[in-house]
Image 1 (cartoon, rainbow, N blue to C red):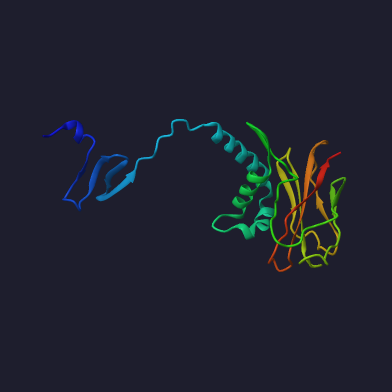
Image 2 (cartoon, rainbow, N blue to C red):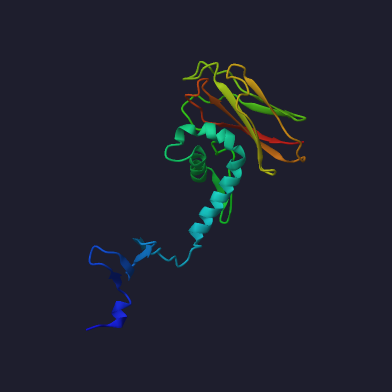
Length: 221
């Protein structure tokens, strides 16, 4: 017997069993556009799209994005070997969110000392220090060319990140491992601003990079 209430829940198949389908059955919706029949799944409704977990994840994501975005040129080199089926920047985002987020809900931030702006198997830096004189930041390191797979001609990559201004100064060829020193020209910034200083190495032929080293936090006088 025909029951209109049941029919309201049924889809209609036109032109026999192999024809088009229109209407809704469960979470499957049939329709047509310009004579082309198609089906789609009705999106699941979310009762609470802003759960505590979702809010916290968004806050962590926002903090990480603000930290990394000014350093994109550095990260693209530093994470190029982790850019498998995703961008180098996304690989860096994933690492920092998982390993360098501090604070509690909803006030999350990135721990500069725990964040890696470069990841790789090349031997990293040792004996690092930084000194700011007027607008020139000098970064020093020890020549550890005899360690591991390090070479004297590995290129030094320097970065100074100013969190207050959300900007980074980058030099991807600031010297070599053997030179033991490199510089960055720092824009004028208010007294009390801090610079998070990083150093990483890249093989001369670009075949490897090292983990970045957080050299230190430099306060602008």
